Image (cartoon, rainbow, N blue to C red; front, side):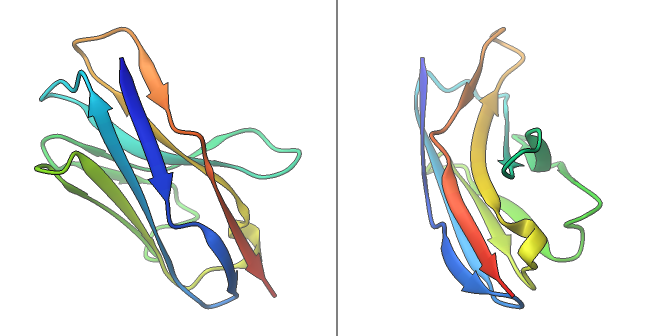
Length: 117
């Protein structure tokens, strides 16, 4: 079982920045991937960015150059730096953990990001 706790969401004006954090606890495998997904009202959940335990990153085209994903291995924490935010970035952001050592993936409870125009 893996527990994910997110923080850092909030209300920000367009052009502003936020940093999201997600800390994993429980049975963490050394080989894993963590990432951020988001879901806007009336839309499907979509990938924002992922990072593997080896440090490889992947970003949605819509956030490339504006968002940066990173992780602190010692703290089992993944961060998402959101810069140059746009109103269309408004969504609930979810943290996800997965590992090739387990068939299960785990999700955090979500944190709201609201960008005003």
